[in-house]
Image (cartoon, rainbow, N blue to C red):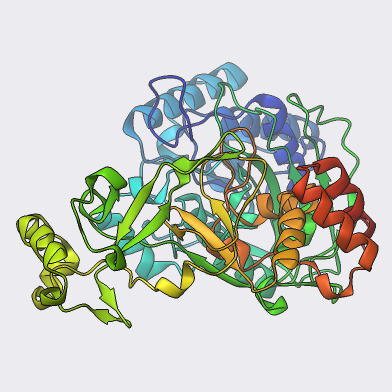
Length: 514
């Protein structure tokens, strides 16, 4: 998440319209009798939600003639870990209560907790749980805290953001049939680290509603958070979920028209964001069609194993392979920079350096550096190995080259001339026309849309080609395409004609029921 001010990491405040929508989602209306409705906000910040909640409770107390103060103390709980924000929260609540009832009362001390929500033991459950849980990336969570969360929460796996255990802990504190509504990043709905949480919700709870507003900014500052509002009920899953997606920068919460879609099972959450059924038999995986997906070689010491031709100093030709790097694939062009990979392997085993005197001299000159690598410390007798074993037969295979993080709109074909570097994913096949058809499919809007839901997008919206994403993709079965469509997709690839690619692919993939 990109911060535009000096606030603490993860601290983002929600604007009033979004807060009102979320409270409506859990049926916390001022027009109903709220005297016995308990509510928890697990990450209260400085009190944006608390102010609206308390105002609604006061309006209800006037309408239904019950003790506002008693209900406030008995039923509301606001948790905030940060001491500075907690102080602001308490002051805001005490000032508001004084304004409402003209009576000084240190009510915040009775309803506010300066605790870690994820480790504090609660002895009650709640009718409503609302809020904006903190966004803190996995690598920024202290290691000590991570170990505690991993033991306590079954959903805190892979590289989960901190909001994941906030969901799990909150759902555990929800009374039967009651509601939770959070505004949060939408990434957990389809990426790997969100899978355990999706499985828990699919099997134990009812996903009622999703409002995906990732391009809007329903906060009081500019952040990149991909927001989404999810409403979840502690009940058996229903057949349908209400879904709405709005790509506007500003959301009119009073003019949202939800549609019913199938409630996702443990395997089908991606369907929520797509215009077709990803699990239909007409769409199959890439590897199921005979292609192989891989990633290029990691050496552990590129400065030694990767050299330009003029730097090879007589190393035996049988020990070098032309290497393609992601820097060769920029601005939608393929321009090889004459890098070579020095290969220490013979027939899947490390070569005998005595057979290659120039290579032996070169490695001995760099032995001190090579020995410092982790892979060399683990196996000192193999000190000149690369992290990944080099397979020279890969060089001659036709392959699509899929560089990560370059932003190319077009994919490149290597008909068997280069070995891929570690930041390039590749797909191989013995059939070059089939690879060109696959390239067209992968460049289509259909696939980019699917990839953006499965994987991670770069700034600007371009999806990243990664092995785990490629292996999850479902695409039309190439063997079942008509001969005319196959020819047109090959031509579209060769001409870099994305319009023609989309025209052909959309015939197979535009209908939800395909």
